[in-house]
Amino acid sequence: MSSVPKAADRGLSIVIVETDRDRAMLIVDSLRDAGDFEIHVIAEVTGLARHIKQHNPDVVLIDIENPSRDMLEELALASGPLDRPVAMFVDKSAEGLTDAAIEAGVSAYVVDGMKPDRLKPILDAAVARFRMFQRIRMELAETKRALEERKVIDRAKGMLMKAKGLTEEEAYALLRKTAMDQGRKVADVAQALVTAAGLLS
Image (cartoon, rainbow, N blue to C red; front, side, top):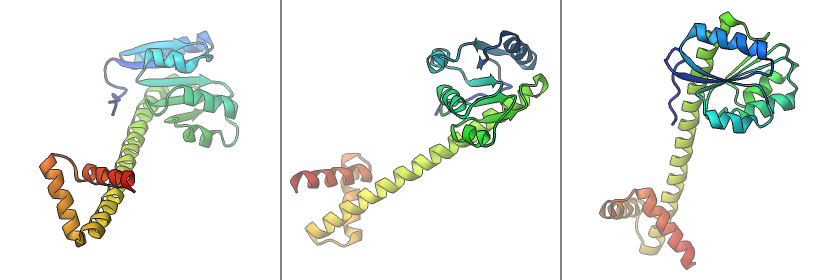
């Protein structure tokens, strides 16, 4: 899991996506006042994903006046919302765009544009929200993996019970002993048994 520092930490790397130079400079000045950040401005949205990948920032701030749904989703996905917090500032927002932004993975979606005095609290909130969702994603992935392992172990137990006339407890004990003898996980031994049985059938 990538460690995302708090906005208050020194050296936080931020990419600003802003096509208007004057607005970009306002944002840069606000960030300089708020903390010690490494800041890069991307003024061209074409090839955004490539530019962001080159900088590999901790946070992406996107400032757009009036996005369409397609533009919003494209910008959100290009900024890598699963890899880092993304905060999007818009002047106006059509109905349903907030939902679309959140679905695309944006950590903070702020209507009524970029206000210098609100920048740092929004940045902190975007980082906190990203961390929360990252933790939830990891927990879901772990739960899914555990369920898959459970299914494989149950299949392997069933095969041993049928082939050797064992009870469920005996079948599991045999899997566990084999795993210990081989220095492997029970799920790995079970998977090998299921795979071998599939090749033999």
